[in-house]
Length: 285
Length: 245
Image (cartoon, rainbow over all chains, first blue to last red; front, side, top):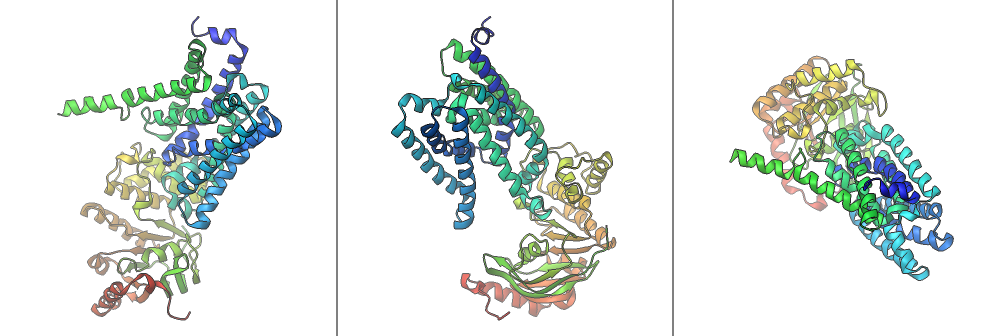
């Protein structure tokens, strides 16, 4: 069987599948809130910001996933908190502080890796490898997915309110800022969990592409979240099968599959799809 | 709804980053009073409202009697109207003070939210996405949320701006209904004819308090001229408080 072969034949692909599905369940709803807050590029910024932490952990501990994940988590959280604090203290815009921090962090990460590592290892950190999904990585992915769902169940109402009407949230004492910070921590955690299989750069794709595509399948935020998860699950499956048959690295293959779902959604999705709009205009004209 | 205490302002100065937008205001909003806050752009009307709502602490002075009693209708500009939620869900946020982040919403509360939608003329809109509403319908939605909040003190920041006549009249009727129920209402307004006709009390601001009392006594030609002169004299540096506290 063309579709089942890869997973029957190779244990590491089965692991990648389980880990990928865990990520597909947890990352897209977070991406959805990032998109709705007009922060679609923030995930990318955070993924770059994690790099020096990952690089430092690699130099100290080698290619051990728990160490790399811890390094990435610490660096990512520092970028989040640092950007928030900087914009408050210096009065600048938060996106400007984030941009400055991530550029410095990216350069520092690449510099650290090239100083102590080889080009092969650099690509593995940047783009991931399905071979990187060992037991520890699998546990981190599954644990992250569980934690994310628990957080979303608790934070759903405040997150929606903080996005929809932050002034009202402040007026009724909803502590929107605190929930938002917790939310960003979850984003960092998901990116960290994803990078072992997908790499720091590709991890963002699983978070954002299904979320952006989901806008074309549902009108309400809850429906969009379900749609995003379904699209991500499809992308992980299709991506891994593609990577086996076309001999591609898993990260780019999964993100390309997600990109194909996104393109199809933009074109043919029932909500604001390009084809639907054209047909509508044609009928009116 | 509990009966409101009077809201007292004691030498209140409010502003941003140490720069006062409105200063040294003292006085009292009596329980059940209906007061218009008027003044030129930049007079500090919204800032004072935010201060009373507890959104920003006064730079100086004290505001008493407002904590926990207040519902604020902000200027609609701060909302993300494209956010994908239904009208019913948006109105249900009015229950936040009692339901908070976690408590389940009961069937009775959903029914109350649907009633609030009906009361503002949005019957049948419960399942509509807020992004599909016109500006007038959206303002009706915010009034429905206020209805559900059921607060003894209502702060309305330019509630009639950009509304068609019909919607404005409906919302004004709602304000009178709230006034009849004994709630304290403070509204920032620009339409002086409306203020004269429907608001017994007026607070006139132009950074300073130019007058606070019965509308006819405050909206005198002299006061309005003073307000206009002060507005024309405002420069960046003029915002610094010159009078000793």
